[in-house]
Length: 80
Image (tube, rainbow, N blue to C red; front, side):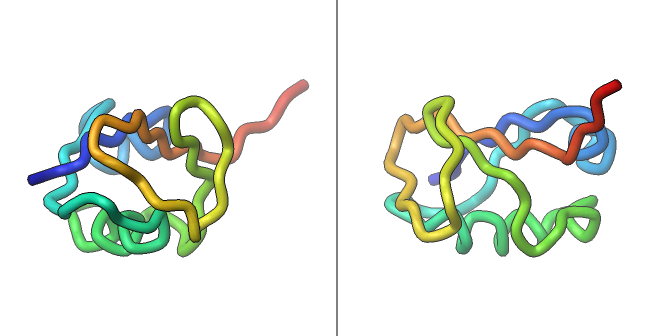
């Protein structure tokens, strides 16, 4: 099983893709998913607690991800 994760900007650059399949079982906490992502090539560029959205809602690292949830990891952005 794996969880697809959408990536943007510098995170997409780090992983070399706009989407990665993270080899974990669901249900899984956001914190555990991020830890698994940090083990993938390019994952060392993720902070320990990146901004994560599940089903288009910002969540904290204790939220549980279920099968078929949409997960996105969003890098910091600056406006101007």
